[in-house]
Amino acid sequence: MTKAAPLIVLAGNPNAGKSALFNALTGARQKIANYPGVTVERKSGHFTLPDGRPAELVDLPGSYSLEPTSPDEEVTRGVITGEFSGERKPDAIIIVLDAANLDNHLRFALEVIALGRPVVCALNMMDLAERDGLTLDPEKLEKALGVPVVPTVAVRRRGLQELSAAVETRLAAKATDADIIVSQERDHGLRKQAKKIASQAVISETAGRRWSERTDAVLLHPFGGPLILMAILFVMFQAVFAWSEAPIGWIEAASAWAAGAVEANMAEGFLRDFIIEGAIAGVGSVVVFLPQILILFLFILLLEASGYMTRAAFIMDRMMAGVGLSGRSFIPLLSSFACAIPGIMATRSISDPNDRLTTILVAPLMTCSARLPVYAIIIGAFIPPTSVGPGIGLQGLVLFGLYLFGIVGAMVAALLLRRTVTKGPNSGFLMEMPKYQLPRIRDVALGLWQRAYIFMRRAGTIIFAATVILWFMLSFPKVPIDSPVSQVDYSAAGRIANVIEPIVTPIGFNRDIALALIPAMAAREVAVAALATTYAIDAPDEEAEAKSLTERLQSRWSLPTALAFLAWFVFAPQCISTIAVTRRETNGWKWPMFMLAYLFGLAYLAAGITYWTAVALGL
Image (tube, rainbow, N blue to C red; front, side, top):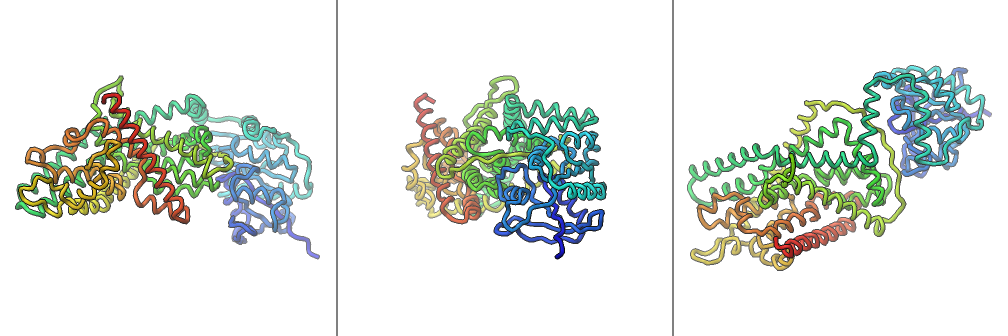
């Protein structure tokens, strides 16, 4: 009877270079299938040991711990321990370590070594570690771990023969008791032990690498880190108003010039009214906020390119754990600041189903870029541009507060959801910190160009279409000559708004706001376009037509109404596209309908409390 070839498995953290090492060892002798009973991919191949024997090599899914938090990690644990149904127990384990992130990767290695199985460590990507200014001593690491450690560069096929020889030796030795005692403290103790062993293996490191570690010690400090993050966000929102004032003036002047040119060169009639009141007044009132959106994304792109964004996720992990989520939810929620649609789609990376569902349900509470025009027009109209401290403007402070209000609202909602409809155990979270680096101007410029293109395309399609439909509904039927009824009240849109108005009157909203809320479901920015179009049509004389939207709001709204309008948009459900994506990601209408109900309820309650409080305070 022919003896089965030894089964060798490759294990390690994600991004350790396992796949590159697997490809280097097996070449084209590979096959891909799924493990029995699960959808996790099984990649296996064959390579030849130094003594000529064939061996089977299996590339296990990346794992951070032997305490699984995802299907991938469950498979890895099951195979390593020999408990996975349909898979034989491995004869040896190759643990792949990223030499440049040794202290992170050693945590998993220590857990596996403690099992007492034949283990060989491949200290991979040694070239990248040296490039980053880190020189390691594999012999010191081998002594500390008690298992063979072989330096490799898989992509250049370096160290493969030495690795195969070490595996052959371990196969002959079979299982032995682990030479290292692993800390019983699963999280903090294991991390501390891994960091100590990693430091023992370091021969030298450059000043740049030490600077990176010292910077992390400050930015990731449990107390100072969150304060620094809040300070960065605060500066970002101050800049949104301070830096955008001039370019917004240019766009407003261009819109006024375009409207004047149309009025001067076209005969009075339906088409001229449509262009001035519908296209220029409606779409132009949204396009004017492009500078503020680009400033916001300039900061986001710089933070991502510098390597700070991942650290922000790490900082937020502790706070998110307090509401039943993990740092894994931070990136999807952060993506929702741009748009909830990619944020909801990004939840696919969250393995825990309850975590994922909770993140989907609270993603609309993160203030997307579509809300910025709404915030900006109301803040610009009702919050004076005064200074409340050195370099601190009141308008930027209010905008920062609205974003913070949305974040806090999302965390409270997540806490309540995790304790009720999405109840379940909390999942852990580990991540590798990217290197600090200077952002490339070309990449940042390209990112800004893409955001500008997306926004302008949105303005030219969804916003334009919604504005055109609203203009027609506001313009027809035409009010009879000498009628005391205004055109807006007589129109089809006005009659619909008059039905809705009694529902929203208790929270301080008027007919104009009721009219704007309906098309805002197509896109948040349409609320601004709807108000601009409504007031352009409702203008009683030439003097009123010359007024800006800001001036019209100041003359028609009270401060409590304006504040209630802001509070509404902090919580109001997202656009129809977001609801559709939620239905697709949750495979049904149950959760999208639940999302709509609880967000509308929160929006109404928040607007009402804000309005009633403001009135009580005499504002």
